[in-house]
Image (cartoon, rainbow, N blue to C red; front, side, top):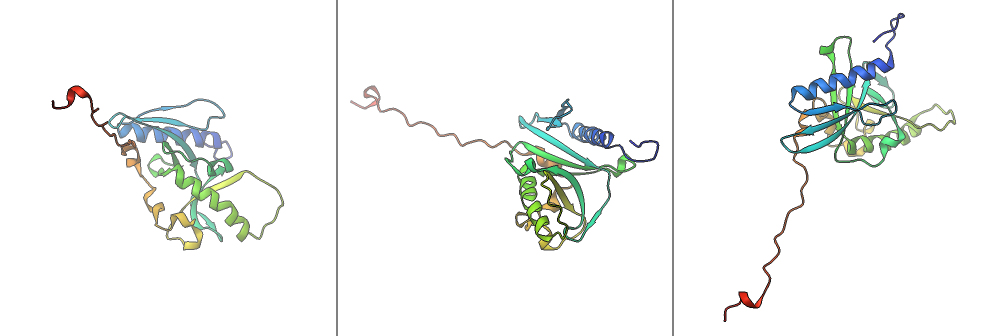
Amino acid sequence: MVDPAGRWLPSYVALAGEFFVLAELALRGLDCTLTLGHTKEIGILVVNRTTEQMFRREVKTTHKAVQHSKIFGSNYAWLMDERHACAPAADLIYCFTLVGEKPERCRFFLVPSSDVAAYVQWEHPFWKEQSTRRTGKVTRMRMFRVPAGEPNERELPPAWSDGRWRRFEDHWDIFDRQPHRKPTTRNPPKDTAKDRNP
């Protein structure tokens, strides 16, 4: 995953992350397949045969260790796009993967798309408000961060004030949830003449 100069190659890091995630899913008895394509948005399709539930999985991978920011504190960070702030879906799960030099050092953070959207919607305006850097350029680039330690409340979006980010790491049982089903109601029996007592 490194070039002759010892630098990590982004395309190989991303591919390694997807295969590490596939292995973890397979070990948990989940059927999964890797999608193909250079511009694909969904990396893995997952099926839980027990619940008959299907999930879409987008994998984001980094090899960078803890990042230190005056605005966001100490965190693990992944590059995103502004589209990730829109239209969360119940069947879409993000897996943010931290790949180390050795496989046993891999870490996985599994996050519902609703939490990703809430963070990305909050992150960019907050960064613009707090940052002293002014380039004037409009960019689609966004970041998703998971705290590395105990953050200050101001370093997190309001929706995360309940500490939900603590549940993200190794949250593999997110694939065990039962699909949402609307309650069924029986239709009342029809009042027909033949059913009435004479």
